Image 1 (cartoon, rainbow, N blue to C red):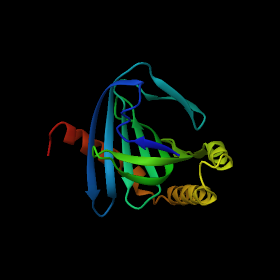
Image 2 (cartoon, rainbow, N blue to C red; image 1 turned 30 degrees about the vertical axis):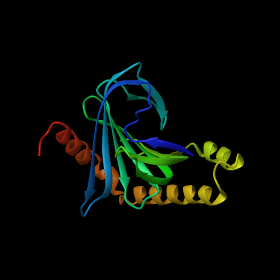
Image 3 (cartoon, rainbow, N blue to C red; image 1 turned 90 degrees about the vertical axis):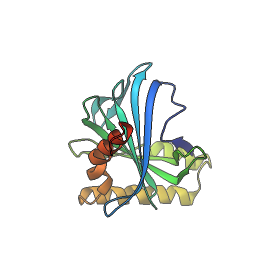
Image 4 (cartoon, rainbow, N blue to C red; image 1 turned 180 degrees about the vertical axis):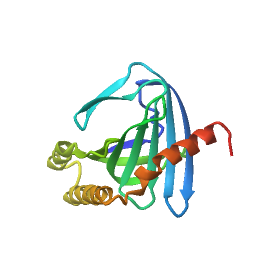
Amino acid sequence: MKRKTTDRADWQRVTQRRFAMAALDDAHFTGHITLLCIDAVREPLWVESNGQHVCIADAGHAWLHQLPHNAQHVVTTMFDANGAILQWYIDICGQTGISAQGVPWFDDLYLDVIVSPNGQVGVYDADELEEALAAHIITPAQYESAWQEARRVMAALEQGQYAPVGLSASHYRYLLDLMAGKP
């Protein structure tokens, strides 16, 4: 498994960044949210996502992470420089936690669910999950757990009952206001 922090402090591509986080506990969402504002990059990051070539990291972009309490996934909503959503990238994970520095982290279980702004949903990196199982990096129980969580997330998305996607824009604005010192 790969442990990732939501501040992406080890990400060499990003040369200037700002970071904010908050713990929320309300009727709609319980967990942590973080915002990585990408102020400068060595070079933009382009990916193929649901059949489209998309720039997901460039100067002015922002990545919102939502870590729902008691869930085995983390949602990364990627915003362009105008605040438009580029995609939702849902990492299926093992554990989550908070570092000694107060930054949320997660253990990535390779499998991902990606949602485009037009609602197209896809499962990605199943090959990486298979390789991790074959190499004994993960256990058969973790493998099954990853697929169960991916299916659960996809079912909630299909039923329109997946709260983090609907809350991503308001969480983004909340953390931008927090960075700006607004109440």
